[in-house]
Picture 1 (tube, rainbow, N blue to C red):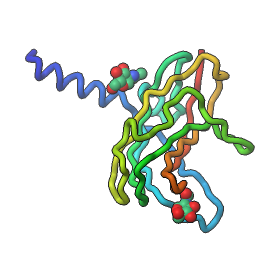
Picture 2: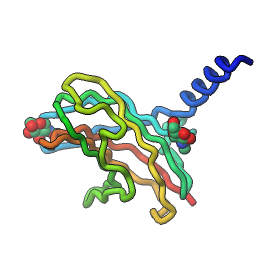
Picture 3: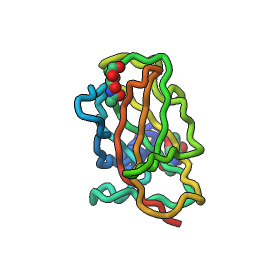
Length: 155
Ligand SMILES: *[C@@H]1O[C@H](CO)[C@@H](O)[C@H](O)[C@H]1NC(C)=O
Ligand SMILES: *[C@@H]1O[C@H](CO)[C@@H](O)[C@H](O)[C@H]1NC(C)=O
């Protein structure tokens, strides 16, 4: 095999390994204008995506999470945080880089489709269970992109 073929093979394997997962949009009080479209959310590893089940992630490990979005807003800086969400509280996930500009194009421009990605540390200390994860990304004016998906952590 030529090194070019090997490269192509690696690229295909990397692509196949990143699975498209189900997500829902965040909910807001009625009448709140939405400022962002989420196109696709990908998690690696996530064999379970094929059966539309929550991704099972080993603790400790790292998971690659990426999503494509189009913001309706402008932003020189973008912050991001993931939360374990429930009806009562959103608990921020500690240990992640909250500067979204580290892995997405800044400044963000309205109507421009782009991608954010992170290698998320899955700590051993998180209780092992199925989580609803709320992911937010916002500018200085608190206009945001937001979606919710599920992750199942196990030891
Ligand atoms: C995440 O992505 C990085 C860079 O593309 C890669 O080196 C790493 O192996 C990936 N990790 C997992 C868990 O897939
Ligand atoms: C969208 O932007 C408008 C104007 O800044 C703001 O009032 C509204 O709360 C934002 N909506 C969301 C969901 O962030």
